[in-house]
Length: 73
Image (cartoon, rainbow, N blue to C red):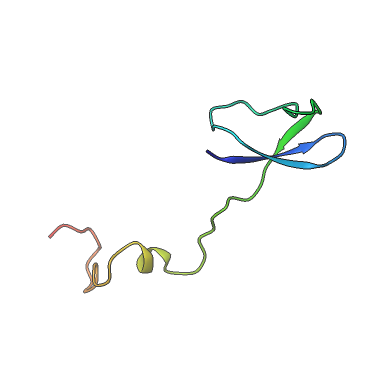
């Protein structure tokens, strides 16, 4: 279940809530009733560097020796 970040509109304090992706965004804090809004944040994963697919998605030796990489022989 994803964790969403919310911000208190009045104080600026931030909170994290685990919710289903299908749930509507909260508009009030469930415990205090204070008005809140969902804020966007960076995802928890970042793919960096060149050759990620080549080095991490295929076993060593697969695809070597040229060709278009179609996979069928």
